[in-house]
Length: 396
Image (cartoon, rainbow, N blue to C red; front, side, top):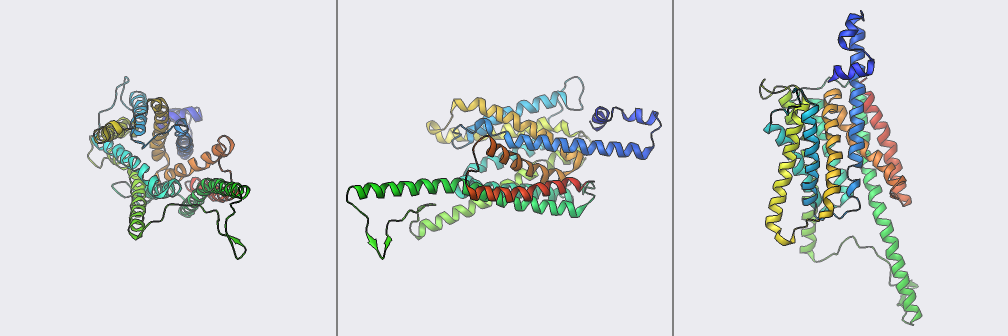
């Protein structure tokens, strides 16, 4: 794969470089530059894909997310089928042998994905996304940097300080993006609540029913409710749910960050020499695992919920498109892991969707509407962009 891309970029194959009398060091330098360029291109494709893959369903009501995940997995499986036919080491459009362990890695990702609706319900989208993105990024980085779970310690990081500082900046930026999202949702709701209270007060005044005034202050003040406060038992239950949601967000991120470990172990011969050494040979099996886990979850969901199951037909096509985009991004991530390593690919791909999504949200979707959300977004951007650049430069 690398030599094929090298031929396209440099205009020469490895054999051509040797036959032309090119010095060995220059050959190595050209191929290393090709690896980096190809790896960063894969990171960019993955980042763009993960930034836009949910846009097809943005205007749709996905309900509890179970049916959406199952329909999305069909689109993912289609990408896996094409990858297995045309981008693997097998000849004549032959799909590689099914690898159960690679499928288990895909099932791990789907398990984390199925947790997300409950996480959002208990601790909110902003905090949930921040926690699982951060744990995903750190899990992948730690796995590659220190060589855990059977993976060799990576040698691609030439400037460890730049990689570490970039990772810290990218991680801290997640907090500011989360705050930007929270204030973007919070302030418009607050303005609506204040306008409603003021309108009610004006109506009462016109009818001669003025609110009581004590010590020069209006007793009726606009308030924003984050949730109903009940008795001590209810508060305790809410705290327990929040802790469970937070713990599940961490677990979901760990599952996301571990999804590539088993395919990489197979490629590296950890489970024996009889497995392929080409990472693309494991993509189809990986995506089968995703689809199988989603189908199993949908079957259990329909069995338990019965007629109350949310199965909107209008969600099928957008979910398929979303799955195709996600699948392409995941394939690019597979190859990026090979070209630049986990310690570089995970932080970059984990950071790019936020940057791209911010621009799409501001320019096309009318998001980031309030002053506070724009300030937090700007701070997050000023942290994340240098972080990504430092991580990219850490391999030079």
